[in-house]
Length: 231
Image (cartoon, rainbow, N blue to C red; front, side):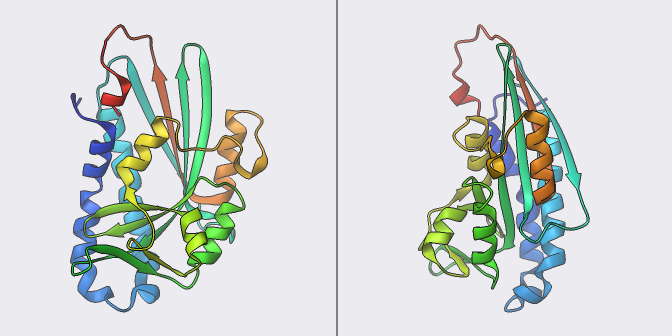
């Protein structure tokens, strides 16, 4: 068990293997991202999921326990996403469930402009399709400097089949998971339908190729330490 480490920092550290893999293949994919990125994106997504499954249960927080499960199907729906994240938080006899969707892309770090960039002819279509289900939709860029997240709403507003951090705000994947835990990110009415926690999971499974389900149980805690210092 690892103590005194924030969830956001631990998640970002777990994506280091993705950065190394992107660096190793950069010479082969330069200028050919669209033709050969599909299989590589799937590989990197598997690394991302494995990192979460290994990292969260290994974090020791006062009176907090984690369980992580993942589900994969052979291909995403045409209107679906690469990734769906579902979280169930149990505390003080209450339980909430919420989710977000994400598309994965291989991006590049432009050293001269100190910016992140990706292009794909389907970016706007994918953004619109996810946003038809939930405004809590994101694009994850796998880059040599880690996994960066961009809001699908911002991409829709920018109206381009590209993702450029000079034009669109971004943050780290660890930040996204932190906000997910803190209930600032996540939708409990995916597709406008909500009946119970299990139905939310099934809706996300219908619309995403890979699904990560995180269960968090929080027991009463006498510690003075703020939850903000933990996530």
